[in-house]
Length: 135
Image (cartoon, rainbow, N blue to C red; front, side):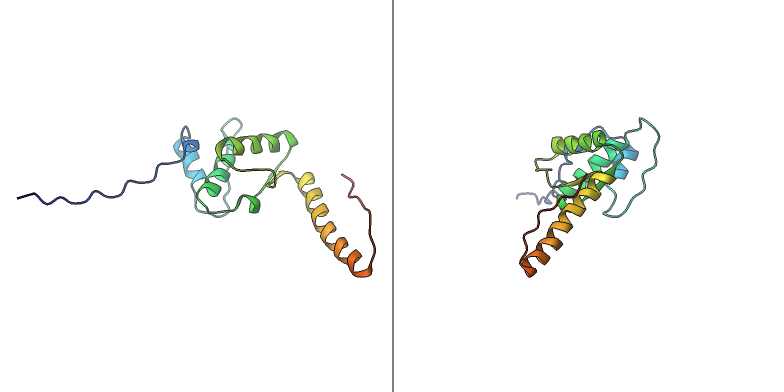
């Protein structure tokens, strides 16, 4: 007689490699449910790492579309660093993501919306407009 065996429970999916190296508090902040979150931390505590890893986590788990994410930083250098880190964590094209400074993102939004609105009006009245939103 062959002894009855109980099936093994399915293995938990492996955590993405980009979660390794986070401490418990950072891991908790990264894997919070999809909602607004306030992260308070001092200098050198890994805030940029937590924020970029959280963005990667939300994208990787399918909770958000990369193009629906908005990340506002204070400097162009910080925005570029965030994009570089996300690119290193995920095999996605980050070119269209909304990551930048307040002024840079506002400029991009104005360019996008104005081209849609002015283009529609110009077509309607039969004009071809040449215009520029100055940075």
